[in-house]
Length: 176
Image (tube, rainbow, N blue to C red; front, side, top):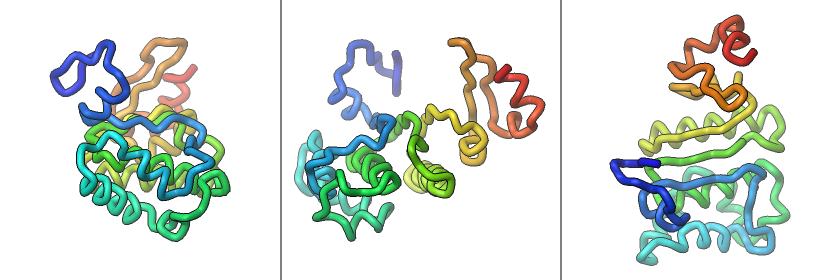
């Protein structure tokens, strides 16, 4: 695998973070027994200097102001949407250039899905972060994606601008 001109075969998670990639797994994974602040601090554990951690946390709290109110709260007591915000904030602490998201809508109520994907689009636009989303809620992702790659039975059935899939007939064609 190549990223930014470098071979990443056999790369460790720390290597990937250092190369500018951050990953948010599906399922709103946070450290439930830790506070929101402690979770954010864990997000920056690979940063070389404390001031970078502080700046990263401040950026994350600016993007997700609801988390600022919950800094002392145990992460396990957050709602599903708040946990997703925290998981995303954790990934952003290190100022990635590439953000990999696995099913960011999993477990979220429909209005929260729209809000979460809109926030992801804002992060990409405002922070110049490339975002790769693996998601089953195709119509929602098409609203925010620039390019789409559709896999069907392990093969690419479509790769191109998201606008091309906004037509229902074309969307059915690439999925069926």
